[in-house]
Image (cartoon, rainbow, N blue to C red; front, side):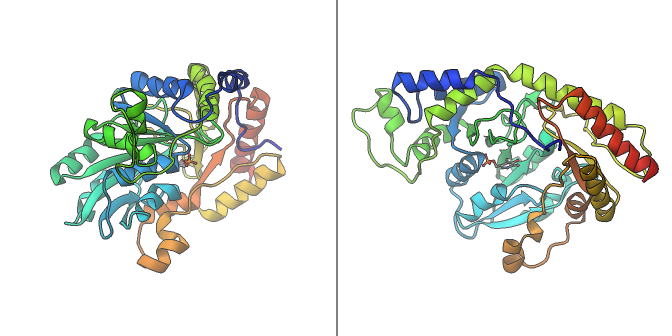
Amino acid sequence: MIPFNKPFLTGNEINYIQEAVSSGKLSGNGIYTKKCQSFFENRYGIHKALLTSSCTDALEMAAILLDIQSGDEVIVPSYTFVSTANAFVLRGAKIVFADSSERHPNVDAALISNLITSKTKAIIVMHYAGVACDMDAIMAIANAHNLFVVEDAAQAIESYYKGRALGSIGHIATFSFHETKNVIAGEGGLLAVNDPSFAERAEIIWEKGTNRASFFRGEINKYGWVDIGSSFLASELSAAFLWAQLEAIDQIQAKRLLIWNQYYKALQNIESAKLQLPILPDYATNNGHLFYLLCTSIEQRQALINHLKTNGILAVFHYVPLHNSTYIKSRQGIYNLPNADRFSDCLLRLPLFYTLTPDEQTHIVASVKDFFNHG
Ligand SMILES: *Cc1c(COP(=O)(O)O)cnc(C)c1O
């Protein structure tokens, strides 16, 4: 069976973990953590980066930083992962769901203005498959209404919007290093603070509500409890693992893009009435995070999943839109978001990972073509 994903190891992870262990500094905010954070700050133009134990943690930090209170409204795309919304629900926010655009799972920026009320505090966007949302349009709406923008860039490392790195545009952004992402640490994440006014407080929230980071830099002579916070830091063991991955980022990206482009080229000739391929807006680059097909119906997609499984290939659908989740339905009733529903029903992801061999990919492409040409 060709799996959907296989975590890729550069081989250096264990060496750096060994070094971290030998150094005797195992908790967070050590040498490897700083290396990873500087990498993000320098390469992507992020004001301040903080390594966390997950993207979910980084999103929870964002909600605390924005001072989200009970009764505040936060606009969130429905076609996303649970954490994009749950982090704000934890602070008492009411989630207002936005639909995807017709052509792409990303939020339709043109729908956002209509969702804004006097209670709205923030707009959360998610760059699906690492493809940029229309950030100029979204930032303009936010500025006009004095709202904050958080980018859930969990899938978007090494991706750009009009030359600017995703995760460097919103007031705050978050990344994930979960084993299914391009660059991994098992579990891991990063908070990107782009609005400098959040930088000092971000570090305090990260360090359990204390000013310990400032103390370690010698800026104050004792540290204590100054704000709310939690243990959001990643350990040095995770940071050491991640550093080996970040060092190999060009190699990882080149391979993923090669596989993505080969899928695109090979499947281009199937009639568009039967199958749609991903669309990349002019303003966005591709980071090869995932390759999806759009079937014409949920029935056709299930038949394709079954056909691929018979051929030893594991292909998987993606999100149940959050507006259709048990949690939201029982609290907020029924939403009508037809585009998110269509991506939920029709989108199928093909295996895409570093060690996918040319033979395996040829077999996957042949099996997909066989389904559409003879099925
Ligand atoms: C993977 C992912 C997350 C969660 O990341 P964790 O690091 O597992 O917490 C959040 N949002 C999106 C869009 C994701 O793809």
